[in-house]
Structure formats: C-alpha cells, structure tokens
Length: 70
View (tube, rainbow, N blue to C red):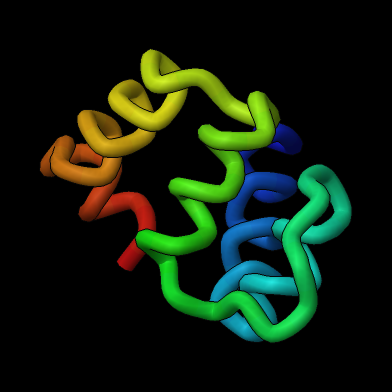
C-alpha cells in the first residue's frame, strides 16, 4: 500500500509542476515546454529509447491506468 501512496504523491507533484519532476531525472533545456519537443529532445540525446516512449504511450492509453490517475 505504501508504494501506491508514493505513486499517488509523485503523480500529484507531477501534475502541479511537470517540468520540476522531469528535470530531476532528465536534462531538458530551459524554455522547452512543448511535450513533442521534449520527447524528441530526449530521444535525440539518448536519454530515453523509442521502446520506452512506446511503453509509456501504451500505459497512458490503458483504461486501468487512466482510472488510477483520476
């Protein structure tokens, strides 16, 4: 149950300030705020793989995940 609470807290923080959460893990240039540009930058700089992006996109469309994040 603790892991679920931690995930919920992280999601809440992400909703409040997505760039702060992203820049903790990734190197994203200041001023870049278009999601497509950010994804492309992360791919171009090998910070993420296409497989990782695909996996996240599949999770985003999963009805169970959508219900969890509401």
